[in-house]
Length: 261
Image (cartoon, rainbow, N blue to C red; front, side, top):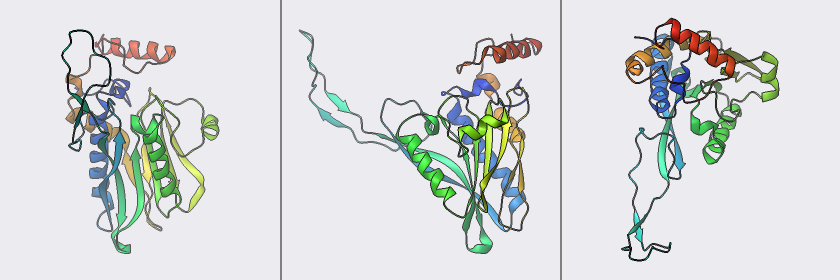
């Protein structure tokens, strides 16, 4: 059974489920692009290293680098009669976060486009957000195009488009923003509503080649089906990331119509 929603499923914004969905969106997007951009271009999956302080439930089910533990005596006062434990210091965890690079084989492997699917870490205040912003600025200062896909309602404004400019496009839940290397003064923006399918976006390549089309809804549906999320989600409950009252009413009616409530 597929998702009952016409577009993004807000139940998948749950931090416990999003890491798996994030990986699938990256992998299947790269697979789709590979079929339409070869032989001149190749879509490859890169990784960015995040260092997080425990406890930090961002990407619990993504491969973590094994960490060495150091032992020390407890610093806190112990209750009378309590045996002294051995206290283990937990160093920062290294988490690898994927993104897509499209490289141009005709120019010796130059990166022409970077595609990011934003994660909770990218949008949360702190070092990880700052790291993502630096990577974002590096791309915007280069000759590469940038595509940012934000399917998370919660968190800091993070796409490269200023919030003041986004206010002009009206209400939206999710967003795709494209910056072309030869037109940094403009942004192609795809505002996405919870109530509509995800867009078919144009992924820019090198001039004079036309954009490669990426159907985000098809990628999402493949991710949903292959991730077997229908087995994991309980639509009788409210989504973990709260909805606005109007949207909550609409979601309730949709799920009742489909017999899931």
